[in-house]
Length: 261
Image 1 (cartoon, rainbow, N blue to C red):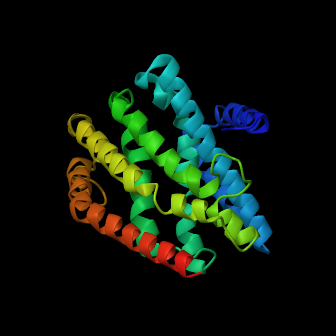
Image 2 (image 1 turned 120 degrees about the horizontal axis):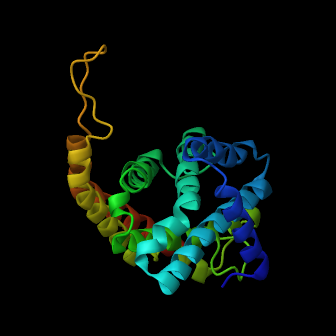
């Protein structure tokens, strides 16, 4: 449940994002995420997590609202700019892991962020033909709900599991359980949506030859985005079970540690 102040923030940030062109969005995302690098203590870190909470809540709110009022065909148009900002800003998480600001291993963060960036820019933004498919709604809602518990569970408490741990040094047991259990359903729905949208985009990728480089050229280099996309699809086969097992392991360790304490 979002409070009135949150709804006002959502509307204000949506108006701001509507004025940003796609070519400037990447820079804006880096500036937004870069604040995270400047934190002198745990409190600014938790305040940054509150920002991420609002971003995830914004996407979820407009996705569900649009789905209810006008159908799945319009979901992408409703969330395009905040989705692009949120997923691009997530690039900073990789840097945060490298410099030790967060404890998440880069080996786990990189494939997740990489796949989301590929879907956000390489598929959804680049090929409008798939933007009205119902899998877009499934994808956006799965991604957003996954982020909302991480950053703001129903806004009853100010910070999420990580926010509470950083600001106060503890988190409620129910919050801990939800943090490490929501992926059991949302990860399969998110992955299914990702794979489905990539597959649907393949014919359009092939006919448009977008992002492909043909010979001859001055660099004496060729690249076929169609076959690169097929390779990306193939990576999902071993990659998805690996990530799911990794998260199951994290869940077991976190919940067993909580019981001992």
